[in-house]
Image (cartoon, rainbow, N blue to C red; front, top):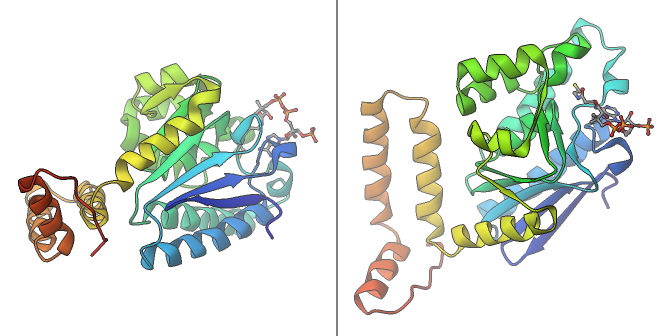
Length: 261
Ligand code: COA
């Protein structure tokens, strides 16, 4: 039903693949429209408690080689601004999913591709992956919020070096600067991503979601407000059935069965 993306489920793990390999999965308006549609579906499934984790990856030898340069070239000021706003809104929607998200970066993650990976909680990379924000080599700034997320991920100085130079870095360097959580042999990447997803989905889903909310919202607050938020959400866990089940199972020396309640 989609032309440029694929969305599959393995139990309660969603796998979203950008599927425009002839253009190294560059984000043109069709890809963006289809991503908006898939993310709407993901939001529904999340709300219905059917999804525990989302993995994003790319078909072929690229994750996403940026926004589509051919499509953007003729933009004027308004066109550029609208494109940036639309892409940034999509990235923010992905970032605001309540479930954990993992980018499984199989190849190039450049420009909008690096920005898409940075919307995810975790970035895993193939040894063949390459990261970069090459926009200034094209006469533009990063447009899908890379100037905001890269410094938050790797620190201001490293982000400035990468954005001002537009250079590409390999997976091992991306891991060294903290952009990437772990590097895998190419054939092991998806397996590694699914295994990590399962290590999240086996736990109490509400506790995982609350933990994500505390981290993401807390990082934008001063520490006292962040601690107050954690106190609130910690307390809310005790109003869940899964807390009773988790602790009772421990005391009864059996494994817990969580029901997302
Ligand atoms: N927009 C549109 N098309 C793109 C693209 C992009 N961002 N990135 C790659 N493509 C297309 C190429 O035009 C080419 O199409 P063609 O076969 O019709 O000529 C195809 O994907 C394969 O890319 P190619 O450049 O031939 O592969 P390569 O292995 O030599 O180089 C890259 C790979 C990623 C280094 C190179 O494609 C590149 O620099 N892409 C642009 C990256 C970028 O600046 N992104 C930020 C955009 S804002």
